[in-house]
Every structure is written in C-alpha cells, then in structure tokens.
Length: 479
Image (cartoon, rainbow, N blue to C red; front, side, top):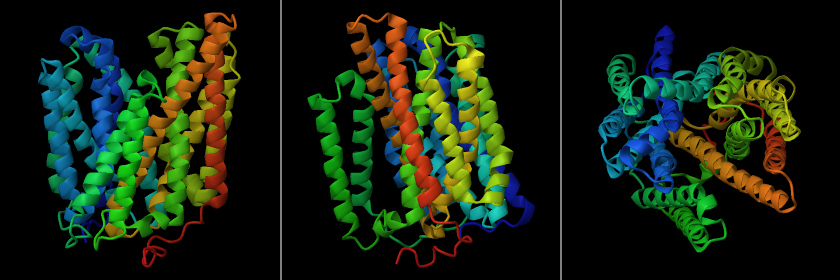
C-alpha cells in the first residue's frame, strides 16, 4: 500500500495536500487580473492573449486522466512531488518570460503539472481517510480550498500586479512549491502505487489525452471560430474518433488505462454526469453574473469583486464545516440533492434579475443561495464519486472526476455564453436598448443553467445509490 499514516499525523498531511491543490486553484484565476498588464508588456493582440489562459486549460484538461493513472501505477506521493516540481519550475519560466512564446509554452507546462497534482491529491485524501466521519470532514476541508481558492486568486492577482508586476503572480509560486515539496518528504510516506506491476497502456494514454486536448481546444475557441465552422466541427469530430479508438483499445488490452468496468460503477458514473451539469452552471454563473453587474448595472471591477465576496465566504464556510455535519446526519444523496436545489433557485433568481436591478434585492439573494448550495454539494458529490472505487484505481477515478468538472465547466460556459450572445443579438435587431438586450441574453443563459442544475439535483438526490462503508462495494465492483 502507498499510505501508512495513522492517527493525527494524517491531518497535517491533509493540510499539505490542500496547500498543493490551493496553489493550482489559485493559478486558474490569478492570471485573469494580470492579463491587461501582460498584454501591454509583451505585445499580445486580443486574439493571441487568450492563449495565456487557453494553453493552461488545454494541457490541464488533457492530462488529468493520465496523471491520475500514473499515480496508481508509480505511487501517489511520487507523482504528487513530480507535479509540484513541474508546476513550480513552469511558474519560474512564466515569471521570467520576456516573449509571448515562452510565456504560453510555460503556461502549457504549468497545466501538465497542475493536472498531476489535482488528480493525485484527491486520491491521496481518499486513501488517507477511510472512516466515514473523518473522510467527510477531510473532504470538507478539500472543498473549502476548492471553493475559496478562486476568490483568493482574484484578490491576490490584483495586489501583486498593482504593487509589484505581473511577473510576481507566477514567481510567488516558487517558495510555496519548494516548501510543499520539502514538507511532503516529511509528512507523506513513500511506496509503490497500489496498481504497481501493471503496465502503462501507452496507446490508450496517447489517444485519450489527444482526444481531450482536441475537445478542449474546440471548446475554448468555439465562440470565436463559430460552433458550426469547419474548424470546430473538424476538431470535435477528430476528438470523437479518437475517443472511439480509445474505447476500442481499452476493451482489448490486458491492462487498460481506464478499465471500462470502472465507468459502470453506478455512483461514479452518475456523479460525473452531475458534475458536468453542475460545473456548467457554476462556470456560467461566475462569468455571466459578473458581466450582468458590469455591463447592465454599471458596477466597476472592485464592486464586482465585493459583490462576489458573500457567496464565496458562505461557500467556503459551508464546505469547511456545515457540509460534513449534514452528510453525516442526512447522508450523501439528500445533502447533494438539496444543495443543488438551492443552487438551482439561486440561478433562477439571476434569471429573474431586471435591467435596473438592485444589489440587495436582485443580486445578493442569488449569491447567498448559490454559496450555500455549492458549499454543501461539493463534499457529497466527491464522496459519492470516489466511495465505491478500489484503492488501486483511486487516482484514475480522481482524474475522471476532475476531467468531468473541467470539461463540463468549459463546455457549459462556451454554450451558455453563445446562447446569451445570440439572444442579445436578436433583441438588438428587434430594437431593444443595449442594456435590455444584454440582460435578455443573460436571463436566457441563466434559465438554461438552472434547468441543468435541476436535472443534476434530481440525479444526485434520487438516482445515486446510498453510500456503503468504505471498501464494501469496491472489492468486486470491477469484476
């Protein structure tokens, strides 16, 4: 076995893993604040600037599955250290970059390191904490980091860029990465992976990684290139073909990268569908509500940041304390279902927000409900997804879960933003004012997001199988 930590020593290890994950979560948002400074300094065009973000998303989304499986095969601590090292060195490259090409290339390498850390950290936590109550509390801490990290990134990015320069949003990762690496050597035991001895399915790894990267590339460029354009259709078609090739390979090799029986685990499969629908709504909410406040209500950047503060604080607080208690009291299904119902109502309130909305009446209630709902739901969703998986497949399952979240969020945001743009254009042609047309587009997108969130709530609350004691259902689940 990879892990042999007992008693209280597991909690410092949990904090260490969450710090590693926090560094990854921060980096997904901290760069957004610095984009104008990066553009001016390195001479990016509007079109090329998006690759500072997209290069990271491309490799991050493409390497999650592979990173998780490598952890199962070669040891989770070993891969966690490798991911932290790669991410830290790539951060140094980003911070020292003086050309566009070097920055984009370093961001792509950052994405690989981030994917490995994210995939392995969750599986390490699940293997460290096997008792239901402790696992629920540990996952609450992990959820707290995931929920609050993005907000901290926006704030920290603004401070570092204003006080120093955009280079420091990357250079700050270096001492943090070194400290995490050193602490990991002390707090996490080494050892072989639980799937040690199995061969890496190279063909499967190549085809699924290429398929995911092509899909991410098509999604992040869909609005610009056009969803019906030859580029978008060709990329999505090639991704689908590679996915079919991957499934064929997995059904014929002795040691597949993804045992297809893993995908038939009921709770893992349903949790991934719920994760896709929920991530789509949450990504769209964060993006579109910011646009609503800026372009319709006339808020400045600081006001938008402050407007999100209540939901982020509530989300983080619920993840850290309330969610674990509710899970232990009412179970995974009820907690997940009702959490997503609250999030659905929050999205619906944004869909009803008028063009002359007021913060207290039309913004704050939705923010509060989304904060409570999302804060409560993340913990049981992760517990449900990982609960039936055998230890030797925990890294892979973690990669599957993270991939579902990432792909669902990226695709959902792209599709809902396109719906909003189309509706806004139609209203403008019909003679509506710019604020009215924009608000009409946002309202349509929020209604669709709420519908998806409601479906996720029904699946999570009614279709998931009640949780079994850890390991009880996993021993023969893949056979």
